[in-house]
Image (tube, rainbow, N blue to C red):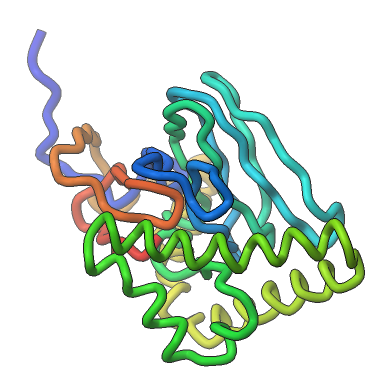
Length: 249
């Protein structure tokens, strides 16, 4: 028996997915007393969590159903569509495998943190808040706290003024949709070189046409670097050579 030959590097994960281990921030609680990440949204990317360790929940807000909580424990898989405002909450060392459509585009631009309408009205203020992670873990927690403070006001609308809650959620969704449309040229390669390429590859094979994806081969990944500071927690992305991650998640 010989060792697996990894000399050929794949250009992407199976089906054009993105995968990241997320350890939800638990260094200290946020302003609402919870161990949590920042509430945020994706405009075009679906996402799923497969729970690896610990327990907690994901809070989900959609225009169709409003606010819903989903309990998480080891072995649970939960998938949700784009345009769902969400945040992870850890009750006991929650760690999940985040599985993302569109080759991990959710970590590379299709994401917006909820800081409330006042911050959203100023691109400079939003950029300053997002950039707090440059200060390290304390900056990441400071950013989380700013988001949670605004999010608490948003949750109050659900309890006290349901119509205003849906109006604010709609405003936030549409704001991020517009920003994604403005970045479509930058985002399309993730789709074309990820899920679209895999789909075309399968169609050729089913049609009896020989097909190989660019640089198709084996992938073995072992995360050896320092975790990145993301919106939900610390991140360890399953990184395939030649597919860069901006760390913006």
